[in-house]
Length: 242
Image (cartoon, rainbow, N blue to C red; front, side, top):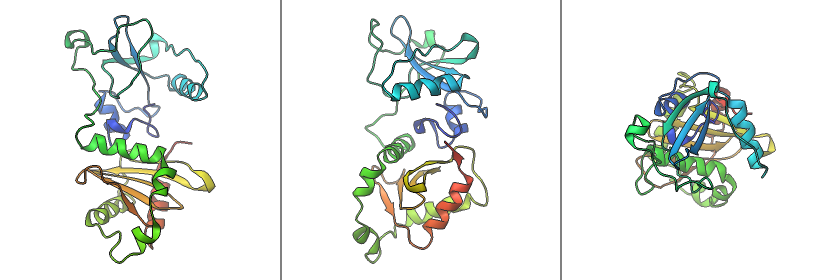
């Protein structure tokens, strides 16, 4: 899905940036993205305005059921060479996935980010993974050790990130820069991004911060006196998935 509430984080910090990465206009209804192969096995990313069709296919596949995803030609907005994400799949009966030539595609093909280096795309992918595996990451945090010890949580870059996130309450960011979804216990799962940083949090718990300047590091932020009110304020600004 490529909508204000749900888009591949690898493409950008917010919905307009993600659309720009694919040369698409950021319309309110969004797009569905279909990553497939042509008859020669070449990779193509097809954008369709029929978001309901793609959302239904995803929900059906998540349940382990088959679904024939065939968008109408009139709903197809763009066909872009390559895939922006790394996929270990291929269509049966076709050649191994490969990028079409620049002549065929009319532009350089989309490629997934290099996992051997660290940068904005990798930082956002890391935040996506933490959001998906929240319980696993949360279990690795020792509240007494990470938050109660003198000087814990005093990373200057983290303080800067929290200040920049708080500034969103006075100057709301582009749509998708803050996203909120359902979490167990009546809480909300929050995701916020900014220039060089990502925050993953639960409104009733802690937060994790990832930074472009700290390759591969995941920095936990305890609730303390300020985090709860910040998360509540961000949730009020967020685009809601549900």
